[in-house]
Length: 347
Ligand SMILES: [Zn+2]
Ligand SMILES: [Zn+2]
Image 1 (cartoon, rainbow, N blue to C red):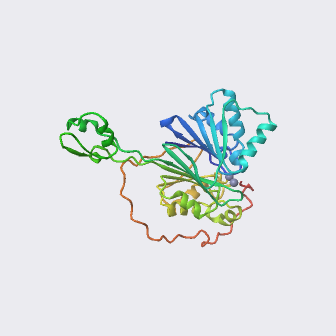
Image 2 (cartoon, helix red, strand yellow):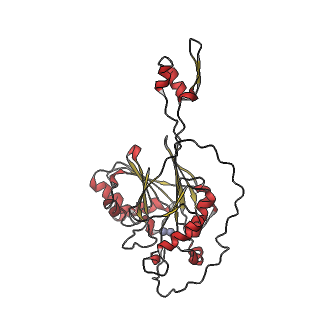
Image 3 (cartoon, protein in one colour):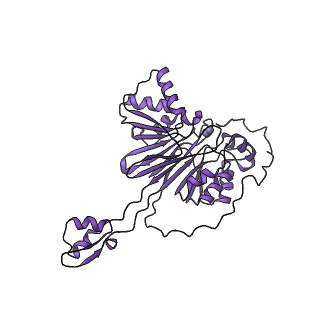
């Protein structure tokens, strides 16, 4: 399970960063699930090791252009290249209408099945290996956060041990594998638990953008292995974050802390923090790490392998009520110099 960032800028692309796009590669099934598809996402695929023909599902957070303007180009190219299988797209209510209108006015015909699903808070997708859920975040238009849950896998069955004990091969092996207790004809009894290795814990990845600090993001992110959360602004620009309903680094870190995630990866940075400006991205990273040390900062083409938790850990004791530093408590400082900063409207 690998996460590759295809775009990490908010609103507009920069030389180093494209607009939003995150690829989740599922090697066990040769599939890529794409989260958001800003303009140029198909070009980012060409520049990466990922194959666009492996895209099987696309999850759209909201209808702002920096998250959807690459969708039609990518879908059209998949058809022309002739190697698309089928694609299911999930997103807010207006998405189906948008794709329908684009197809109609550009007379685009897809040569493969493209299905658009309108999501609602709750279950989005489920099969025998994965569950995807979503929740409404807090942005200027309806925006959904997604939680991808890999199901736990039962531990490996120790066939050699069963054979050594002279358990005759047959349906009892299946029952032992399921952890049941069996009694053989010769009267011997065996507990299946002793033949099965520790449960392989499924991984949980959460994607929250675009949003200001909100409780629903914390709920969605509970105990995630990885939380990808937007951090459009530095802490001192909290006022602007509240106005535009985006997050600061400190908000992202507070969500990670409250949800007790393993790793926070920040993305969707305002282009104003380009190198040489008064505040740079390294300052944003320091701000978040002061609250949540296991924070990383995404950049385009960075691939993060989500580590597996092999052994089922005993459930942690319930956390005491954690007093969270409220994002509002610290008044944002006045910007030291706004004149030099490029005026960029983030969407
Ligand atoms: Zn955005
Ligand atoms: Zn937006």
